[in-house]
Length: 250
Image 1 (cartoon, rainbow, N blue to C red):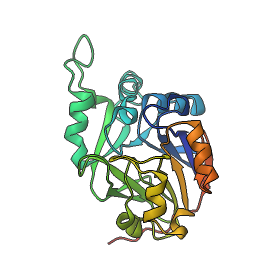
Image 2 (image 1 turned 30 degrees about the vertical axis):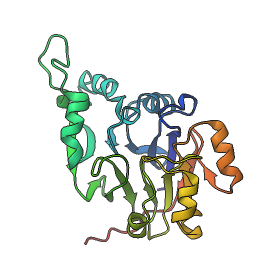
Image 3 (image 1 turned 60 degrees about the vertical axis):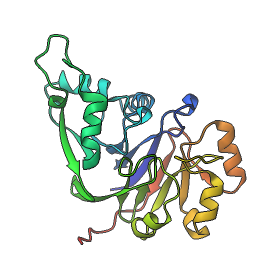
């Protein structure tokens, strides 16, 4: 079946017009796995697919990436066909932080009788996990504090960096099979995010040629990044992906 990456939003936390950075991996034209669950991204998902996600991978816990979880809880808990079945793949170091961030408010329902996690099938993950017969790799990235942000790889098909500074050592290992690389990048970097000067300094031209940039600050920044010869994602853009390679177990 054909694989594709759909950008549900491509902006940073302030670029409302570009939507919060979030994507879905599609298989055969249908959503297969969603990356993150921001508020604006979840709205874009509903508008595109007419439904709520069935499986979500969480890269990190800034609100532009997890603010949609309250709505996802409501949509899942009050639907008997979905309750307890929506898979959340969460890197293990993030599980306690995710609970503090979105799930620990007393009485998730006003009348009580429910836990936040009753709505979901929570799957803590390490350096890899299986979803629908495919093995995906998980790796740490450089965003704020160590072990609080993670990227995702579907081998031979796509790498999603999540929010990060340049990570040449990680991509040398986790993007070594010709994958498309969806990479955090704005026109100007900062201690938590990559700027285009950072990527041009730290990555070889062959790797940059496989990158598509997202998480930028404005439409004008997107134009400026393209003017420098780079591929820049647009909201709701769909990029065909190569078929994932057969699983290679360590």
